[in-house]
Length: 291
Image (tube, rainbow, N blue to C red; front, side):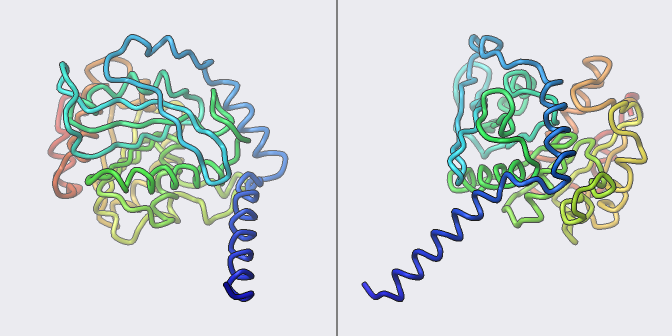
């Protein structure tokens, strides 16, 4: 083995480790970012595996990142309500910043019963996941998870809620392969809060956004219309399907089960479609007194 080749290998190893070590650096302010994630994570419920211990088809899942951190969450296995079924693909769900995986996975039964394996992981530093809470790390963690899942499934689907929608768009901006994605009540910008413009959701919308559905809610008390509507409008101008629910609150906070089911149906219609919906098709599919 030549000295030049050994030098190249060493260089690649050092670069790879440097990248992994840089992952947890703050990019939205050295004080502000750690403080905000500490605040958000402290607002999240404590993890409790007993919440899902007796639910059929749910099992714990772990993922080791390239910087050797273990992320913990759950997998809701594809099923018909009675037995496991061969999955058509996967749905990776990226949560908002005050959620834990054992509560989120319970909400995703409909997704699994549409014959998808559904995955959700606690952010690093949240619940039982290892590492420090940093936005750059969380983005790249989920990119790695998607790349890993893409090796095992034919259909590749992404669903991001709130801050999770921002993370999904950054994954897409980093060229993660996907067949359809839903961005539900995500902020349009983070740069006004000290983050680099490069991670703004609007900056990571693809020029052809036809595989994406963007949802916003008129009753959202967490993120106002001024925070979510620019992303929706720009996405629509690039071919995305969009829907502004008159009675939609922030994801998983809708006031009754009927509105909640309507929202889940809209999401599944988009993810389950063999071809992307147009904006008109999304609106037609969502026509309801609840709109």
